[in-house]
Image (cartoon, rainbow, N blue to C red):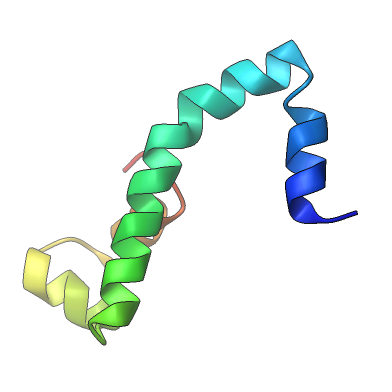
Length: 67
């Protein structure tokens, strides 16, 4: 089963869909940060120093977690 097929199957469950939709904005923001960091050649350490956040905080943002 492909990942997209699994996602579509899981989204048929109302409880799963509710949680997925609640977390989607944080996940999308995290993917944006991760993509930007990689495309611009920044390591976690370098970005951490640039913006004044710990490497762990940046990892959490990239994973869509609360900081």
